[in-house]
Each structure stands twice: as structure tokens, then as C-alpha cells.
Image (cartoon, rainbow, N blue to C red; front, side):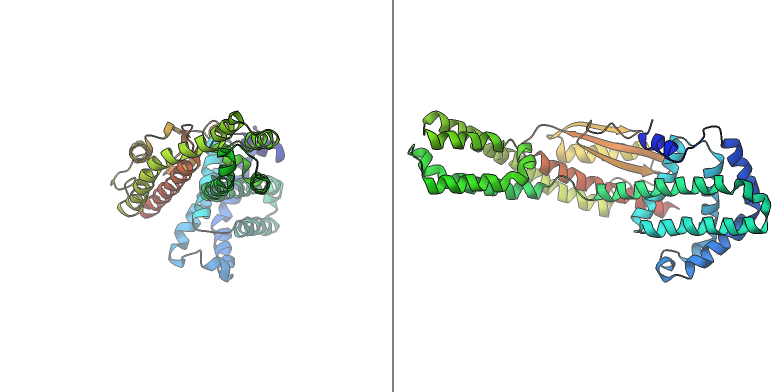
Length: 367
């Protein structure tokens, strides 16, 4: 079960047995749906910030969709399927860059118009609280999914941080190399190296991803300063030079994948490799995605799965929420233990974003 769904049920005290009451509420509000929607779009178009999101020639279509959305909200069980339906609307709003505050205003306006209608027809009053509660639930889901998309669009893998940190670590290490080779302590070089290690603490986690353990390096550095020996020098070399060499070797493969990724990115966006079939099915889209990632990162990917539900946190390195028509699925990728896995993850993340965009454009153009 989706944990977000369970939290919403608890926060809003949603009763699983309230479906008959919601359907009654729907029947009460239905006769006024057209009037409410006319007023809704009239008031939105009065505000310049909203008008740019509303093509006037599509208003009849938008009204019909809005009414169908409210019908579904009040007539379907509040389950995973309904959650995904509402989430997709939030994702669309993310793609058209409609600020969450504007989404909230839309829900506020709709609630106000239903409230106004209840003053004209008191038979609506007993159902008002229930209708507005489910509108608030819908608003919460859309806001959550909007920000989930926003965070997914910003790569969390910090590959550039790794590049900066490794360069700083290696430069500081090279400053001590002469004293290491001669088994002596150079106080100035030692002090500079320790200072560099301290400054690199903010990059501790990203360096650990590439095999550099700052605590171990610092310990061997301190031991060497107390009693220079070949054993300590070898330990320092293993802690610094071996991860650096591994990074250099895998960087060669990554460079090839980087060039391939650039080609794949242009093919995804311009040639529409994922969506170029007239009758695109979710199965075919998944085949295309698997082929693209396999051709570019087959050497690095350990697991590549398509899931109907969001996987447990931490079970994959990267997860992308994708949709095609009524089909919603997750692209879940696990990457092998590589010294440069952050670079690989960031490249796969960017390809995933391009794939997501073309699926969205395909849906929009197919309407």
C-alpha cells in the first residue's frame, strides 16, 4: 500500500465507507456543474497570471475534463488507482510550470463557488463539508506529486562535487609525495595535507562513493607524521592512489558512455526513439527504454526493472516515475559498485528526464 495514501487517510480522517455519501453529494452538485465551471474559468481569466495557462479555444474541453475529474473524485473508491489519477494531474501541472500556489488558488476558487451555490440551494449544505474535504485531499496529492517531480528533475548525484573533491584531495596528496618517497616528514606539506582533509569533510559522503575514506587517510597521515615507515606509506597509497586509479579506468568507460549519452539524448528528443511509433503501447515504450539504457550503460547497470508501484526507498539507486495514457509505471535502476558510479547515475538520470519529457509530449500531441 502506498504510505502517502495511508497518511492522507489518517490526516483527513477519510472513511472507507463514505462512498455512498460521496455519490449522493455528487448527485446534488451535478445539476450546477456547468454553471460553476463557467464561473470558474471566467474568474481565472480575469487574472493575468492564470490567463496565460488557459487557451481560450480549449475552454469547453477543459471544463469537460474538470467536471469529469470531480465526478471521479466523488464517485470512486479512494484507493491507489484514484491516487495515481490525481497524481497525474499534478505531474501535468509540473510540466506546464503551473506554480503550486496557483493550483491552490484553483481549489480555493472551486470551493468558494460550490459554497456560493449552497447558499442558493440549501439542499447542498449537508454535503458541503464532504465535497470540500475531498477537494483538499486532491489538492494535497497534486502538491506532493508536483514537488516530487521537481526534486526528481534536479539530479541528486552531485557528480561535479566528486570531480572538485578528488582534484583537491589529489593535489594535496601530491604535495606530500616527495616526503613519502624519502620517508621523512615535511611539516609544511603535512600541515597543508591535513588542512585539505579537513576542508574536504563536506564532501566526505561523495568521496566515499568513489572509494576514498577520509577518516582512514587522516589516520594513516597522523601515524606517518609520528613515525615515518614504508608500511604507512603503502597504506596511504592504497587509500588514495588505488581509488584514484580505479576512477581513471572506469572513467574511460564512462567517457564512452558520456558520448553515447549525448547521442542518445538527441535521438530521444529529436528522433523520438521512445515514442516514434504510431500506436505506442506501454509495453513497447518499456522495450525502447530498456534498449536505449542497455546500449549506453549495459556495462554499468546491474538491475533495470519496470514496476507498477513505487519501490521501497533504497532498494534501487535511481527511480523515475513515467506515464503513458492511463498506464503509470516506475523505471527502477540499480548500478554496479563502480568508482565513478555518481557520474553514471547522473547520466542515466538525465536520460530518464529526456524520456519522461518525450512521453509527456507524445501524450499531449496525441490528444
